[in-house]
Length: 118
Image 1 (cartoon, rainbow, N blue to C red):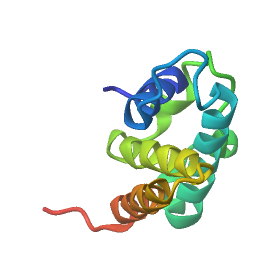
Image 2: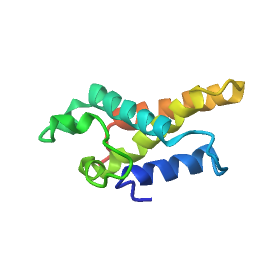
Image 3: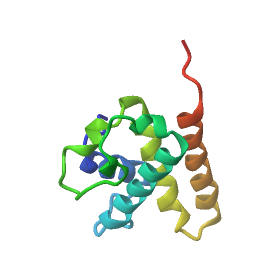
Image 4: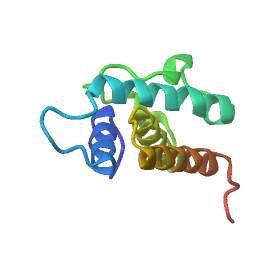
């Protein structure tokens, strides 16, 4: 799981969401929107992660693009994925999904803000 491209994020999000049907339950556009929100939230919580990077990196370009995600440090790519999944689950009306959504979003925040063990 490299999470180098937007397509990688979509594929991994679908695994965690168990979204393997066609047509997909969560459209690509909604998942990309969730990834954009994850990038903006990460920038709010950890602006230091974006030092020296292009100011446009707070949003993800088209689904087929391969460039921008490689600029994000590898250790912070999984938290972005967790935010995506949590955001997607929030739209569901099932009670269990609300708890799952909160859990994924808490993992995102915890992983971004926890100090690195030396």
